[in-house]
View 1: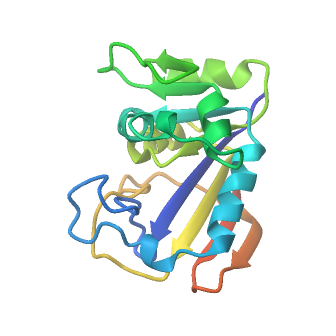
View 2: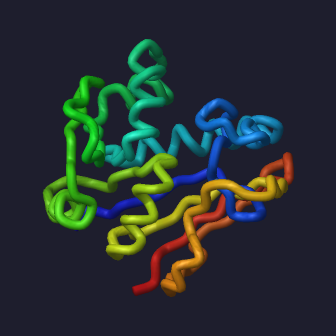
View 3: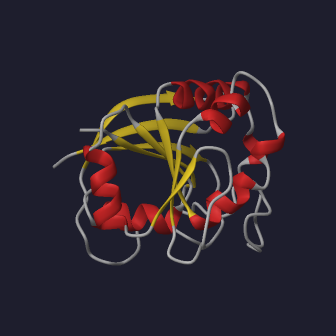
Length: 188
């Protein structure tokens, strides 16, 4: 069975919204860029090199498809453009970015994708999708880059839904900027 790995930039107060700045109109968008470090880029390249496919929600797909097809480079751009991309959306009629495939139902379609042949599947951002994946027990690992900033609210992975999720820390690393790389395995 394939593994689903969720990777997120996250604040101390649990917000994953607008780390780059213009993804949403959040008043503190761009909070991640203030802590950029070479380790972050190296980690992201290594993370992408170790998966066979991407799983994206509609909004993340729209952002990525609007940028990455015009980029080249063997570390990140070429692999992200080449890899199969599975997009979960009920509103998109089609997906046009190279090697993209449309899925409609989180529980059914992603569960089937996990059962298919292949290696790990990486989920970038896509907080709404990730909430559904967690709810349906489809996530196997969380890779969090925790930044030493609290932005007072915004989209979070874990809402007040009173669902119990347990994780085991499998790797941690401090970056020179004060940010942390934290990898967790879901405990079932």
